[in-house]
Length: 311
Image (cartoon, one colour):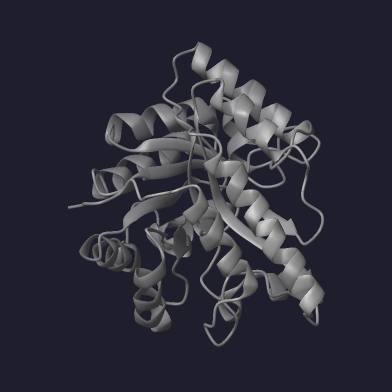
């Protein structure tokens, strides 16, 4: 299992809690572009370094997140006027500088985040619209050259089951692998709703595994309508168990990340005001039925951490 850190002033509390429950950490906002390169070619890794050092000290692996995304970019990048050559150089420089800094310290990188719309068409972004679709192969190739030890992922939401968006990713994966682009894993974010899980999650995992890719559930939360009640809590527990079983039943599915530790840190109420309570622990850090369902599923599958020692 995996966790995320969020607000720096509270990071010690969150990390201490995480070290007791999770085997991997994703630094979340601390490795995003606005935090790491707030001014062009001036890098700040303070927050991310803190999390990575804490994780290694506590025997936890780290998942890097992320190199290239359309969101949470600094103003200088969002508001600039770029031609293809210059923007490509900016992207490559960012990957080289950040990848070099964390070389050998991370299990994996989300190299490209959320490149498609839900209908499977390309998302209109600064990267796609100026550089073109080849920004993905350039990003992956650059990341691999900088850190050949890290597994390289493309990560997206609403791709849990077989649908137009996951089809686009599947076709992209086939194309990249045919061209021998270094692409190692498909990240299924897993922002789900209670009692609305796709029925074909195992089949979707299996088809990416069939290409020789790793698969990871990278940002799992399962939200419900508020206020919570016993029925919803039970449904949520069953849904968490379903997702965990879909992963552990396929050897290519190598990990599950929950998107924050407890409900008080969740992003969901800020985006979906009538929904929430999506995580394994409540606002008092007490385990919920979902926590015990996940623990039971992992125990039944005899899952052990693959990550036992880090620098």
